[in-house]
Image (cartoon, rainbow, N blue to C red; front, side, top):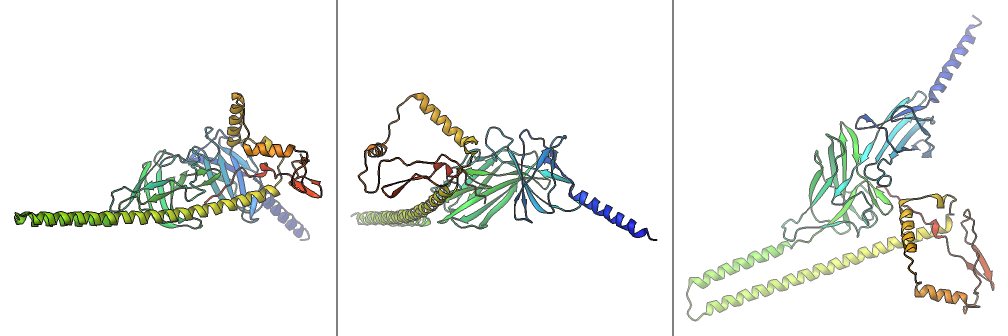
Length: 441
């Protein structure tokens, strides 16, 4: 009887050890696409977000022996979201058509999970009305430069038919698409316009013109057996999103033009009936009818010209307002970049990073150098050089002494030199400007 408490303590310790061992076990990951094992050629990129800590945490993943199998090292208890990105298409950068993306939510407890199945979605290649295999300039960063489609010139509606087409993702997949209207400069879900599903890789949407300050948002997904197998991803000069945005302009004749034409035709028919119903030898009826027709045509022409003048004037006012808002937005962006430049130091790894943009700039510079064409400085640059070489500057408090700039990349402060009691500040570092600004909506 005296040994029973000892055995109970041993059993409790063994139970706690088993729980701790289960909590410290690694998690097996299996990559799949279209319910089949996916063994990508490119190395997947794993990132994890902890809802418990409300921040991104280290996500250490190593390759296992089996195809498409990986091992996630132990994470602390809590809820997580894992983002997996595979740059499978070598013909374009990451997150372009042909690559794989997915987000997986899971919870780590003392007993699991032991295994996670990661169903990846292939990024859809949109071919119409725009090609998302390249950056679509102005689609995501400006409301005034988005792709625009006009309604037909002669349409009672008026409505425009916008044709969408994309490459197939998987055999037997169903494509679900939605269209939403949003207001420029305002975040939110927007106003639902239409939604549908099809097994084809095309969709023709008949939409009305967008109002001032609005735009349409198109999104398409590929589903198969209740699994997401395809998703849309677009780019615009560094920004990216999960949709395609466009506007529709009303270029149709107004309805009153059709009514005026119909009324004029009725007047002509009535006049012809009265003219040819009774024969007038003196031709008074002919002259009266001619004057009436001329008057109707003159009135219609004046009314049409006035309408088009008012419409063009209103359109110019709207475009001026949009341009003003765009200029204010760009000014705020420049202020933000200037603040970032003055505060952010240049990291040591900056020169070692190579992107498609830096490669393009390097190629262009090499082509200019190889052409051996002399590059002539602008007149402003030559004037500054002449002023800088003078023995002393004409402005009080300044001298021709060149300011010293620190070569250290770890310091964000611009070097200064003091001459005649006035500090001369070196220009802020251009390299601190961020290369990529992401906004996912």
